[in-house]
Image 1 (cartoon, helix red, strand yellow):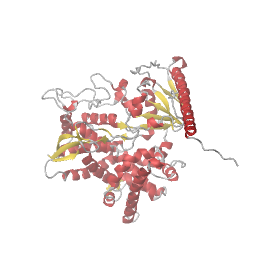
Image 2: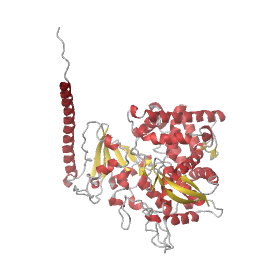
Image 3: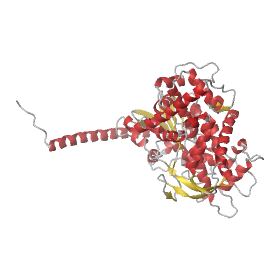
Image 4: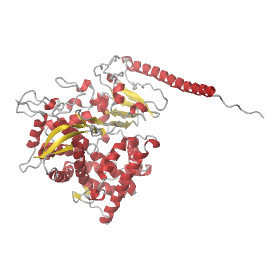
Length: 578
């Protein structure tokens, strides 16, 4: 009986080496093939004689199916785009990347972007499902029921809107309804501010303090006061979920997101307890949204309308809790960090906008304080309509949104379509590209489109204006028709017109953020109330470990598409009541 001799160590090593060499050869072959394909497509794209029906050049890959996912899903903000535009000319206006076996057309051309943002027919059903199933923990069946994927539009629904979107139109986009929510927000915010720092000057981390005050005020305004009584640690649970959300959304392997799933489920469990408690206390009755503007159990009109809609769709309490978590995410995860960035830039005396060249020259802080005081009523309260139309406040807010927002607008093409391409000047890349006004971009049906904010919000061809700093620099007066002039009595004019199609912090088209009106009021009112109530002195900054530093906070590591990005660290300030 013969026996098989064991392989020697050298034989095993040779076998492993051959296998490894085969894999590397495969990857090298894939890269060579896709590089040749890219160069041919790029040459065709750059050849004016081909005119119409040009497809975005497909970028080379090394690993089949995986494609660009490892570099795209970098936790370093903007790293993928910075590396891409180090060799790929922005003037091309589009490219195609591969993510998990799927090809995605990335658009960063002004004309094409404007066309996409105006088209209200293009949807993102797959991405909506990705958000609520992977991110919020709903079942696929509950997701389809909520979005009415297989249900004809309800009678009386707004044209082109499902019933859940009709609720947003009715209660989040109408000025009078938004003003009601803002009033409740201000009531809670002012109550907390009136009780803060009674013993004189106190050192705090600005964003850490602000987060608590704003979260309590916005949650109370939206969901009622009862929720924070039932879940006193909701802030902690929510912001842990906020940090985990993008890992869940992108569907990372389960072994990589076990902790994130556990954290989310803990938040959902507490929201389920709130649902059960308020249903018992209200005897199962929800006050009609058209009755009281706000009540303590369910809060605002919009939340009560949503709760009634959940019941109409027979959604289980777990699904309701997931959708409520998503609503909290929409109302707090962006407005709170945006307010923090705005206050830090206003208060930081080391930045150019706060360092006057002459004794009498106003600083950003003095400009802002002047506009806030102009927005006060005779009794000292804020006149919100006046406040939200102050040009320097608006310009500073929009610069915060330009610099610190990272959104990925996605659309699913349902039919063959062409997008017009403009002809911006060539980038500084050494790769030449000859623009042509006759070009159009062809996208076949079922193409997934991505419109990322970072390439558009930082394009020098758009943002490099005479007498302004480069787009890599925060410039609070960027959205003014002219810089503020201390010698002139005329107010500067706020405008976003020069940046149409290249500035979309709230998304656009059919899926534009429905909470943007409230967010604007919430942010500007918070800034105004803080600056009216307190005197701030910047002590320095702290990094994420709490260590003092002279460096202004940067960006916390995060996956792409996280909307308003959170600061890495905080600003340390001494604060006292006025």
